[in-house]
Amino acid sequence: MKYEAKVIPEGINSSDENPLKELLLLIGGAFAVIALLIVLLAYLSDFLIGFISPEMESNWFTPELLDSAQFETYQHETGELAENQFEDAELYLARLISLLKAKEKQAFKFTVTVYDDDLPNAFIIPGGHIFISVALFDAVNSENGLAMVLAHEMAHQYERHPIRTLGRGVLVSVALSAILGNVASEWLGNLFIETATLGQLAFSREQERDADRIAVENLIAYYGHALGADEFFRHINKNNKLSSSLPKFYQSHPGTEARIQFLNQKIDNQKGQTTRLPKLITDLQR
Amino acid sequence: MVEITLFLVLLISGFFFGRLAEKRHFSSIIKREKETLNVPVMTVKTVPAQLTQCRTFLVSGNIVVSIDFFKKFLSGLKAMIGGRLTSYESLLDRARREAILRMKESAILSGGKMIVNVRIETASISKNSNGRYSVGSVEVVAYGTAIAP
Image 1 (cartoon, rainbow over the protein chains, first blue to last red):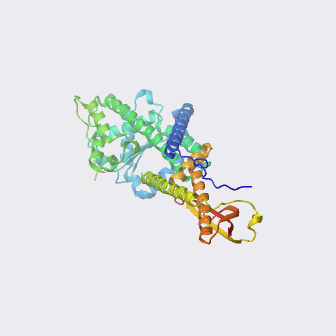
Image 2: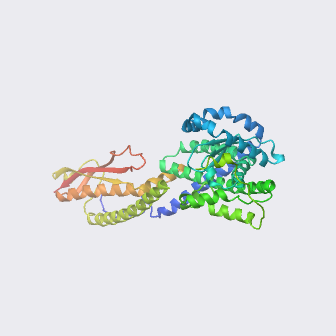
Image 3: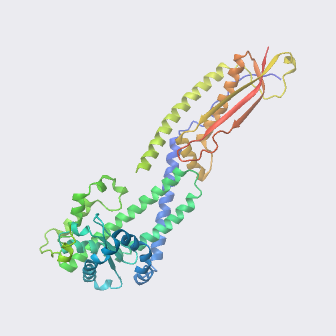
């Protein structure tokens, strides 16, 4: 037996290929799979939501059900006193909602709750329950501005946005947790969650644009013009620079500037007068 | 947003520093392997008959190489679909060759001319490094019987 020392050739036990190529391929694949999954689940969710009529929805998400969860937080924060304080405003808003509601939309039921908060905000949750922060009254100058906010939230309900978002959220998070249970790296899991979040934010921005469009039509149908529709957005634009500093794909709403621009196209060349806010609302302004 | 930025910084710095370290390490390994080519390393269990009168002693070499964030992430991604984890293969290759080189260098220092009964083992000192910011490492120990005239 003769031993001969030899230089072992390279590239047998390790490959020389650039790992970036592999990384891009894998990340691209992962994004594509997740994106496809989200789109499929969204369609599935929308398909299933089609079987839930607005009446069924309001029967499920009753104020009694919400009493135990959502309402309580606000009551807890605002205390007993606040409930009575805003009752008149709530009655006024409820009347405004029924005036704004088109004849063919009578199947949709709404409730409205005013809560005490310094941040002007309005939102709607499944079941047609609209929430308005008291600070929102400061952000509008006329009844038209307030009606636009209400019409926007109502438009979300006409389009079934709250329950669709809920349905998608549930389906996507169930699917994600099934996948994430089998993912080795926590970072990788985060990447998937971020992708899913971006997808949902894109849905959300689309919903906001739809709601704006429907709301402005609703406003024109009721008042005969869309004047004052942009009051709330101008107020946000003036007072809140934070949201616009985030990149567009990271926002749940379209840029305020873009929304004002859209509304301005509608308002342009329209004649008419805005309706003044009633005293019970101006009394709540600070 | 902070999460994503931190992640990208870790990934990019992992890639560049990891690449640089690996390149340097490989060129050092190849150079030293050529230099120590005159010391045969074998896995035979017994000292060759004609060398039984020589002095023998134990030599060993060990190394711990850390994986970088980039490699860890890439392998996590790859593990989902299966296949060769090439980002880990080069790491193992480096560790094994470096451990043998160190063993040879220690033999040369003591006048050894060849090493027999070479064994290579992996040790585990960072098995539980599955946390978010922690990275694992590969540990290789090579040992054998050096023969000196």
